[in-house]
Length: 420
Length: 191
Image (cartoon, rainbow over all chains, first blue to last red; front, side, top):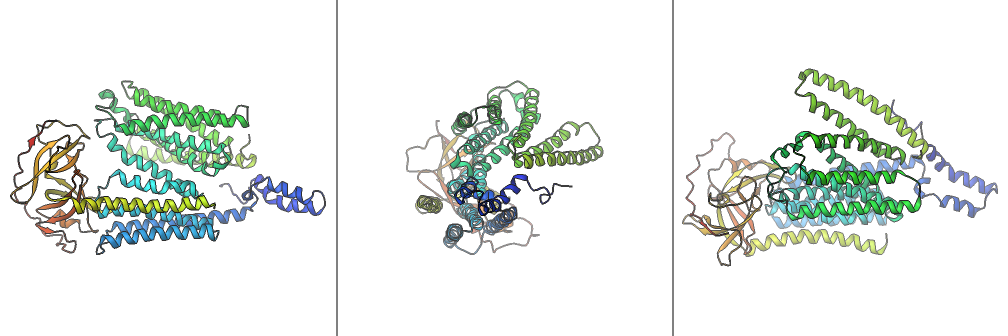
């Protein structure tokens, strides 16, 4: 039976919901003054004091608005994709520009004038998706190559400032996703002078960028003003970095090492600048985070361990770019071990810091890794039918154990609020 | 929302519009001021998730002569010379753009050793890719700027401008391709 939120309301949540009523009663009973009551309530953020039922409604509105925005955006993209035959290019461009401005205007009006934060943010998100459709429409009108990296770059450049202007997690997610996509579309140009080993170089870059985004998110958590921009950065960075390490757990990725160091020729300057700058900034951010955190708590904390873990993964990314061990085995063993330890660290970090999302991400990657390793090592050895039956059993068993462990862990997080 | 944030919000929206218009202006400038040339091509027909149906165009001039030493990602400038049949062919391959009034198109060597020019995609209305796929002769009229960048003006299918309404029956047999006119022998420029 899944954890039932209605029956297991977190103790902290119940306390926050009851607090305004209790403060009012204490004031009426003369136990505290009205000023003291206000001071008590003022020490909690307004969002904490909102009843759970209202918070759930808010989440539902956010979910519906975002799904609506994404569906409308996808519809518009598909509409343009059908090439909109029969309309000249100037009316096409006028329509797309008009729709972008109208969607932004409506989002601005709803969010900042009417106070509909969630629907307003969803409209701005829709405007950003339509802007991306507009960039690709211009590409279509002028027959720009499908894989032209400028298209994603323009989309990213147009959206990213809104990550910090509009305090909306979906827009933060879109901005970061576009950054990674823009880099991904640029990779073939950076590696055009290389004969083999592009997967290793590309994955290393994404590992470093994932760690960079994660490190930015961690630093923001330490700064009160930037805290609203922290969580999405940490989640996107973590998923990107874990995804990259997961790719490195396959021994076939390192096949190109059999042909010597993986590139004949050189990766272009853009790649080298990106990989050097991202690593240096990541390390600086880790140190800055540790310094800021140390001012608050001098004792040993999970933040220090996280910083060390980021530094180790960063070193691994540079090692694989710079050193050829002469075979695929060493690296795949090292990265499998690193992946296992990292996943364990993500679970522990999620538990100790009270982050359900970390726990869920860790468990999903553990499940994916089990399936991947199973198929990687047993595909050639066992009968196909047996493989599928056994895989099914493993998945069911794994699902049961994961669900059981997750429930226990989340219950502890909710009970203790992440404080061990 | 503070005044600064309001300004930043609308500045970003303005930035989006300006970025799109700048992209359009760059392409329009090449279309309006560039030299119009006709290139022989062979189309292939895939699909883009974001942008719909399109044909990949593989140009006759994209093939580097055997004697040219090249590496993937290397940039070349091809001098274009008009042949008697009106199609423009390669008159020389250069790694640097020569100081000349001739028409040059800029290309980059892609894996496999062929050149791409940034005009290798032609978008068509959904379901009309078969017109290009089944044609026996496909040429592309291209505007080439003085810097060597190119924009597609129009696609000629069997000598006629591409018309998506001119869809043929799907079971009609494809025509035999006509012999391709010999390209001008490219002169190999020193690198």
